[in-house]
Structure formats: C-alpha cells, structure tokens
Image (tube, rainbow, N blue to C red; front, side, top):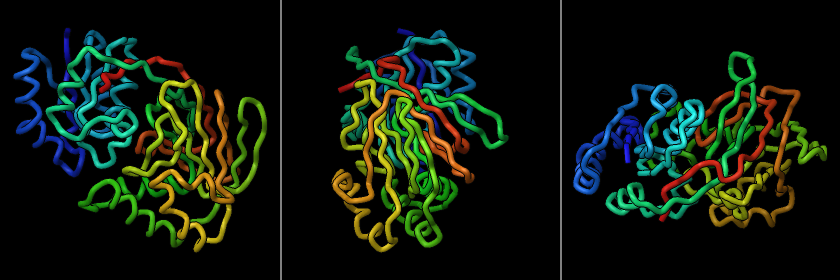
Length: 300
C-alpha cells in the first residue's frame, strides 16, 4: 500500500518534529518499511500537497487536529480515496479522543498502519472567509462560532508553552473578561431558531478545547450534527458551570441548548468568527451539511 506520512513539525510547540524523528519514524520504518514523508512548511501546505499528489492509498497524519483537517481537505480536493491514520502529537488531540486512540506512540503507529478502518462522517461547511468570499471547507471533528472561536484564535496566537487543556483555560479566562453574547439565528433542517449565545458548537466528534466533552451525545458516524448552544446567562454563572463541560454534564444547565440536525445554517448581524477543528477559518454566515461515512479512518 502506497503510504505517505505528513508531519507538521510545529505541532505541540515544535514537539511534533522531534518526536517524529526520534520516536515515531523508527517505529514506522520497523513495521512498514517503505513510505514517503512530507514535512509541512506552514498553514495550508498539507492541503496543497495532497491536492497535487492524490495517488497515495494511505496517509498518516503526525500532528494535531488542524493537521488532520488540512490532510482531509487536500484528499477531497484531489479526489483521493486514501484511508487516513492518526498519530496525535498536537496540543488538543480532540479527534483522537473521539475515536479512543491510545496515547502511546507505538500503539498509534500499529493502528495507523493496520487494516482496521472506520467510515466516519464529514461536515461540509460553506462559510465566509476573511476576504469576504464564500468558501467551502470540510470539518472532521467540530465547528464553533462565537466565544469558542475567539478563545481558539487567542490560543493559536499565544505563546503559552502548555498543554492543550491548560492553554485553552488560560485563553478562556482572558477572553472571558471582555466577552459578550452574540445574536445568532440558525435554521435546523429548515426550522428557524434565534437567540443570544456565547457560542454555538457543531459536533461530529464530542470533544474540543483539549478534552472538553462539549457534545457528549455526538457520534462520528451517525449522520447527525450535534448542535450545542451556550446561551445568555450571568458571567459568574457561566464561570461556575463551565467546568461541567469536561464531564459532558453541561447539557443539564438552564440556558444550554442541544439540537440535532442533518443540515444547518447560521447567521448573525455581527462579525462572528468561526473555527473548524481548532483552526480559525473565517466568519458567519455558514451552512453545514453531513457527508455520511465519507472518510476511512484507521481505528482501534
């Protein structure tokens, strides 16, 4: 099987590159033998490379959720049907949690090069990019709008030399001081909903922010978008209830809303930024639809 390993050397504050050379590559060489390697040079590089090189049968992602997102978008743009393996060395690794991937590198390599795959859903997202043009991008794990995306944006620009969970919490506390709710209107399978939210999260997987179980009912191959909205409440109340997200207990909180949909549109009368798989990609409006079982992921 023609295999490509895509390495983001900057993931996890640069740890990904050294871990690949010292700990991951020797294991892949011992188990697999012949394979190609592409070291990404910056944002968008993995997508560009795979769009131009669609003939690989298996692609292994060495990086975080953003690296995986770029790989998947490159495969789709290039018309490739390659399966994807995940060796998670990023800051958040939320998709790895969604598929119960072990944290041990040798075990991740065994799974990534194995024959067992799972067909999972993808979200097709039409959104406005930062140049004001409508663009299409696919999300593997989660899409967020509002406060969540603002936290992600701050975390990605920060110099916090910490884990995904700690970096997210630090960014949360900084954004929390100035945050306010956003008026957002959305349509769930044609039914209109409008209210004020701190953020809306659309989950394919159930984790975001380095281990927060934001969409506890989400399943990555059920054909459903799990929509979780954190609505207007006093800031002290928001701060009090926020830790419940780690255990997925926040859906019981008044002003937290949960919907399911097969298609969703979201708009606002304000500039509201959006993130996909931990990468800030543009602003509202957006439209999300589900592509059922359209990606083969190597799974435990």
